[in-house]
Image (tube, rainbow over all chains, first blue to last red; front, side, top):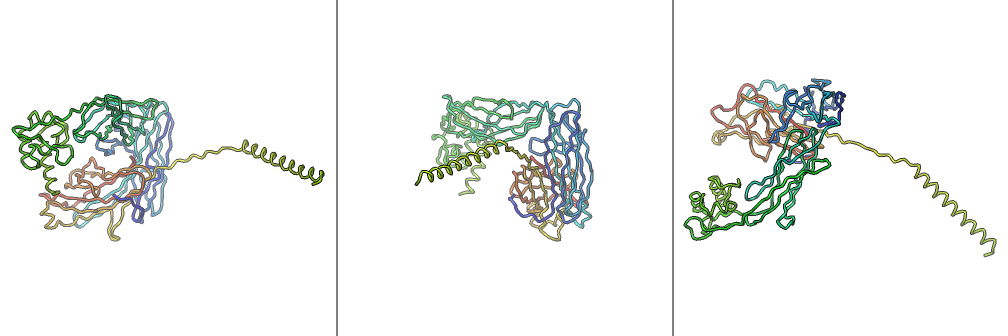
Length: 330
Length: 165
């Protein structure tokens, strides 16, 4: 993906891609936007009101109208359901929405602008490609309540450690800008870590996970108060906190070997499991045979090669992967 | 300098001072009478989704799947980098996702150029996202070659959807 400045080709443009309006119940909100055909050929477009919901993997599911409890779609109308635009021509589309008398909070839907393509018959196998744009529409009643809470804070991984916070919009209004600040203090109250995350928006009834990488390496140890402070745009901040205890490594020879494991490249993982001074297949063998050795279990952070926070056979796979990468580089 | 001349010159000084004071007072009054106008405007979050034609004769709406080569069969897949080029212009944060409207079709993997391939499904896949600006996005296609070989008959359908974040 590259930033681009030129504009040759065929384009569909919408003058407004997201609308946020305050609408009292039973009052009708009117909204118009323009669609421009910047193609060199006629453009046929179908328009329809749809619902949309965000999934955890970041994909927006486009759904039939009235799919979810806060759908505005059943009380919306569209001025046109199909338009044909000549090259350079534009059309104004008007959408009206009237919220239910008992409406409280944010209700949303979308207008899907779909290109109608006649791909025709092809001699061989082919793909027909269609473009569409989703204009998001969000209507919020004046009495809507904007609140959020931190459901939980937790850490994951060993090297690197990641701090997570789950934030829930437990109010009735959409929260357009939620910012977060992660901090950690040591036992003497000194701030040892501070990190902010990009802002997110959150629809009512939904939650999101915000995370940030922590600075600690496997050589660090101590007890830390880790806090996630969330600013959702209200009069108060909400926060959650945990105590993170990082045990110091107490490395001992694994199994019957004489030398202690070593971190040969300073990446925080102790790949030289047998302490021979070299990273080779012998280390893979030792780890796979002695995964439950107290010297491994006690020093989880040194041997958590798949960084899942546990010692499992997958750490042997992770170590093997590191060996493969190591050999390909040398 | 005679006393009369001194009087005349000091009179002019006094007149000058009075005029200055008068003008200054007028200016103060003018300032007090002025109106502060606040102009508000909102930049609308517009978006543009464009096919970038790479060949004047080719239709960007239809992608012809080429015949697999011996090397494709050897690799087990047929890959075409930059099968499509799309341009997104947006003055707000955006994402572009791709879906296939129907399920009963041959497996296709897709990616925004430079990212990882993922199966093209009905649930959809985000192939690119960005902040405000103008972006050109290359779309790569990979078709695993197996017992089903490549699709024939009805074309595969791909739908690219652009939206604000």
